[in-house]
Length: 181
Image (cartoon, rainbow, N blue to C red; front, side, top):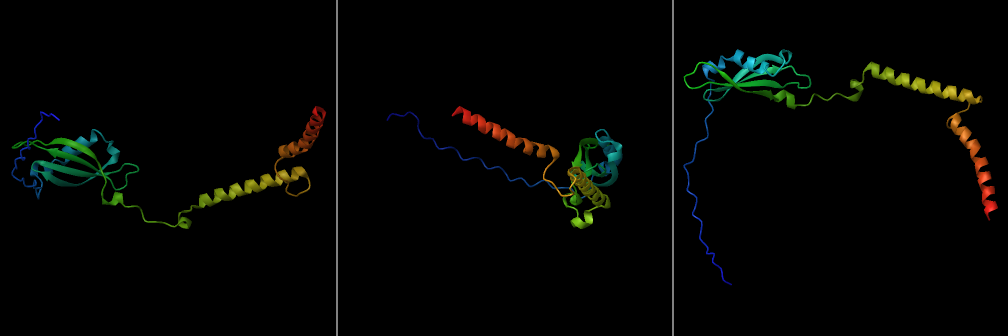
């Protein structure tokens, strides 16, 4: 076997200096923490005003980057919060909205407390069931009255007619089968 390829070991990758994880500031930037109205205005560009609730607080994400949170009054999103992240350039005094969105809070992830079925049943549900049963009974009484004997008869009047016709068809079909032989 003639091969021209030769094995050349790969060089070991150069080790880079280990980076320290980015430290999260303990307190928010004063200019960005005060930019509550700027954050609210950024959210109002994408959210109807009726769905935007009270300001909850500001959380520092990094140097010159703060996230403001607001209550969400959006149907179906119990416990969720709107957020707007604002930033500023070094030595700048104006906050700029970077990102807006909707996040779950601790309360939104939890299921509501379990309530037994008997306690969840509303009076109007019981009334509707009773009305349906009464209509069924009235329909059966009317059907029985049509037969005149007061006893429950199987099926409807159309089914009774079909049963009455079937023996005649069988007899005619049987006679036709005899003629073929």
